[in-house]
Amino acid sequence: MKGKAKLRDLSDAELAERARELGEELFNLRFQVSMTMAKNPARIGQARRELARVKTILRERALGLGRG
Image 1 (cartoon, rainbow, N blue to C red):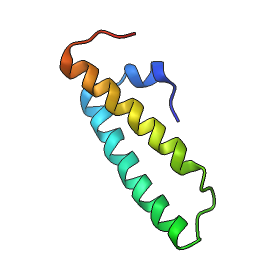
Image 2: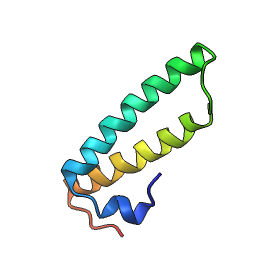
Image 3: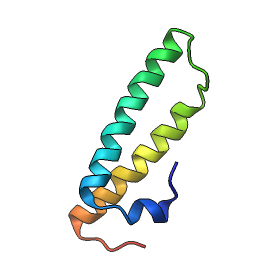
Image 4: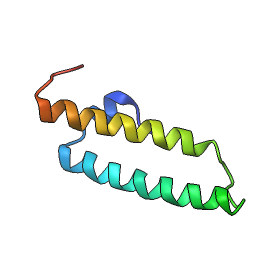
């Protein structure tokens, strides 16, 4: 996981790509958990939070909010 400051340094295109990657990772993790194959089921929560951070930053930029 990248820190919040590092995520804010990424461009919009890089953030969109990161969001896509995290979405795919979540899909795969959910599938693995359902098949009881997951090595680290706690990663689902981590990936969800990171995806939320990325989407929040993208939304702030879209609205023109200069948060911190």
